[in-house]
Amino acid sequence: MKNLRIAALLFSLIFVLIGSGCMSDGDPANIGLSILQKKMHKAMDPDGLYRKSKSYVQKQMMVVSEGWSADKGYIVETKYKRPDKMSIIFKEDNIPIASIIFNGDNVWSVNYKEKQRTLIKGEQLEKLKVLFALGRPGSTYQEIFKDVKLFETELSGNPYYKIKCISKFEDQDPLYIYVGRHNFLTKRIETSSTTSIVDRYGLHDGVIIPEQTHEFVNGSEKRYKLIVYKLNVKIDDNEFFPPAF
Image (cartoon, rainbow, N blue to C red):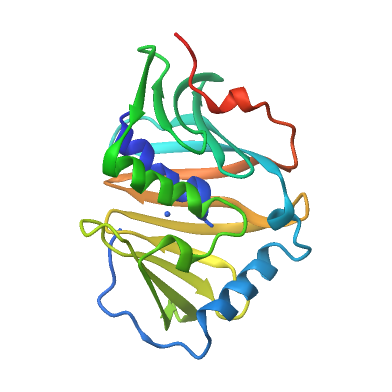
């Protein structure tokens, strides 16, 4: 799996919190961004368990549909440890095939089939750090993006807040996040090439998170189903370094 393809998958795995842009941003919102973010945090993390957590582990089943090809299933395992360590491993038949590993300073992509690991550098490294920041408890949009704008809009007749996140990288299109105006849960995330929609939320280890999501990326469809979500799991620091082949 190529580096850029894994980077694109990072949106939906970490944030959902992730095709095409919208014709209009919508009307000015009747709420401030800081207040909206507090309500979003409260909606998904009512007791503050996620924001206070030292680590978490999440496993998802990902089914990929591309054209006339048969659907393919993968396990996607995400691990996070404070303050800024994260890994995402893709498994086929329970065997690792690819991963992205971030230990706070360096990011590696790993191809297990070819027994290759690549240290990511330069602008691509900085872009990946932004994506990892989205999955860090307590992070805010203002800290991550160059500029953030807030609007009101509708999707399928339902009211939403629309958050427009403008990257500090000039070659990146804005990231759009749609949040329910009544439940303050993220429903949809869009980039210029990716659209991710949350189908269902559920309560897991005291946190309300997406249980089912579907995503469209460059002509392929990916469906995610939550298998495991656990806070404060003991994780060895060695797991945030690439394997020595």
